[in-house]
Amino acid sequence: MRALDYKVQNINIQVDSIISELFKIDIHMLSDEVSYTMVNGWDSFGHIQLILKLEEAFGLTIKDNQVECLTSVGKIKNFIKDRTFGEGKKEPVQKGEQIFRGLIDVNYDFTNISEIKGGEGKLYYRGYDIETLVGRLSFEETSFLILKGHIPSRKELTEYTEKLKVYRSIPKDVVDIIYKLRNSHPLEMLRTVVSFLSTVNGNRGLESTLEHGIKLISQIPIIVATFNSLRKSKDYLEPHNEYSHLQNFYYMLKGSLPTNKTLDFMERTFIIQAEHGSNASTFGARVVTSTGSDIYAAVTGAISAFSGHLHGGAAEKVVDMIKEIGDLESVSSYITNLLNKNQPIMGYGHRVYKTQDPRAKIFEEIMDKSFPYIKETKDYKILTSIADEMTKFAAHGIDKNVDFYMGLMYSVLNLPKDLLGLLFVSSRIVGWVSHVIEQKERNILIRPSLKYTDVTNMDI
Image (cartoon, rainbow, N blue to C red; front, side, top):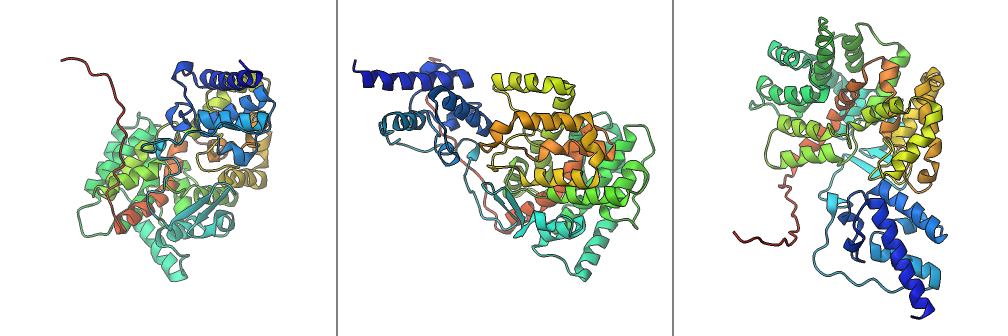
């Protein structure tokens, strides 16, 4: 065997071994055609771990624009051969249908609700950068913008705000359901109650989808606050129609009005969480809507998708991670242990953003400005230490996402951590409603296909 052939073969073996070991896949199952869409664990975070191992093994520096191109075993091998020998064997053209597992990078429709520029770390609502909106608009104004497409006039805002107040009350039948579910996980409770709202809100009546959507925006915080009281065996407070949307929410949760600083914190955090494109829960809402189902069925589906630990449950998992670490001295070993097991670091990485999530940046700025004392807490210091440990990943586009700091909401508001998901839904309901309306306006049944893979038939 010639020396060059031996070196090429050695590269092939090394790449296969690294991928096999990292993703716990039988090395004999690997071929040049195997791509990230075919391997469990080869997600955005796993990809960066792979890149770091390749850099270490081959003494390379792989640039960000190159990272995104290394999407299959063959492409990785050819890249390393190109860098080592100046040229590599071209990867054969794959025949047949292309598979996009997880519908990654697939546009299935048009939208004018929001835009995410992942490479730049930017998020826009109806063309407005959220960094421009935060601190300038109220939650009511922002939700109107997301729903209707423009910032409301004074008259429009008054009418919208009054409508939110009118819809605040929930019937006794709903309270009874909440009481029966008081010992359930909060998101399980909300999923069930929203489904039940379809009957009590007269969903089959003459009111528009938008009108029912406004009802849900108004009533979900009431449900959350009522649940929080009933599970603590306390009398729940009736909504107060002289208060703003978030003032009333805080009042029903805590029994008093928020300070100006706390209210500003709530306004800003609710605004940055209100909408975020076609994430899993929003996609779920649109799929349900596309079948002709009503908005309550769609939002129930959205909550179901949101409750998973890879989506809405991630913020609570960040809090769990902090508690598991326990102290600053344990951060490094904890993170190293997870990485060695190819397990995710909660609060890090995002399917869309290739840099820091802009919402995480805004959240951090809010903490700096309004609640500097939080930075002196053990929890915050542990988060800072985690960020230090993850610096090498941030350089490759795996950075903090909104869940990383969102767990601090329960500290600021002094609420149980298992309410984090419900606080998020109380904001994200605005985006869900907007997408349900948009889907209905130009509906088409969402029905992707699956590629059948051959199996060995057994004699009957």
